[in-house]
Length: 348
Ligand code: F6P
Image (cartoon, rainbow, N blue to C red; front, side, top):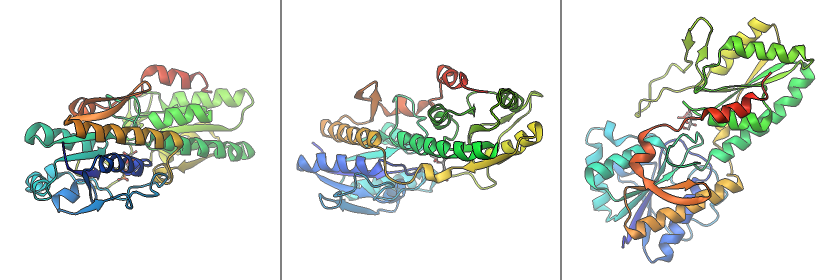
């Protein structure tokens, strides 16, 4: 049985990371094994920055947002000698196993290190985007949806008072999970997501239809990854003018402003924008995320104890199961059409 286990948190932080760290550590210490925290994701293994985790270190962290270990978007495959340094640190620190908590990027690195170098690693699916395949839900998503829904509720009252269109831009990268769920929960009048090529003209037509019914305010939720799509066939992605990260991701953000301008010009309705941004990632996890993260952490510790490496804890229905890491990172989990149909029933 593994006697010294490392834990790392990589990629964008999200509520529930500390709950996983707590569960993995507690379960492992109770078995008599040691736990070591790796600082700032894969960077901590590249640069050999680790810190011991004991009962005291994990006390009181369950409700805390962020990650006590820090995180980064470091990709060892993009650093000269990075993979060798990861393997060297792993050996030098006397680690027998690693629990990697992350999204498609962090777990993609874990899957490659397992496949190419037999690194004994187990994954835990984290991301507010909920875009990992092979699991029904990632932890962090429920909190992000809760925050976005609360924002939509608040925007409703001010939209109504001023007869305005309120555009709310939410995160989610190239999938529209946060937009669809918070939009349904918050009663959005239009939701635009990357998976559905709804045009700006169609969106404006729905808003006009609503106004014609006597509702002279509207809430439009747009996912940051939605490409402005027009009847002419033109499609325009909106991203920030900065370098891509080590995983090749552009930095999204800004589509809300472009869309609001379009809506105001085409409909003549006064329009305002709210970009929720990192507020969706900050703060305390919801009870649902705390429970899911805890269950994932226990499962990950048990997979390590069983020597079941190259696996990821996953949620199927109500059950925590394990799946191949490779399967979890093979493709993005997009919002299925039937979810969008539920949202569409309330457009206009
Ligand atoms: O993947 C989580 C996420 O919050 C995305 O929704 C968003 O596009 C991205 O991370 C933002 O990244 P950063 O924190 O590097 O700005």
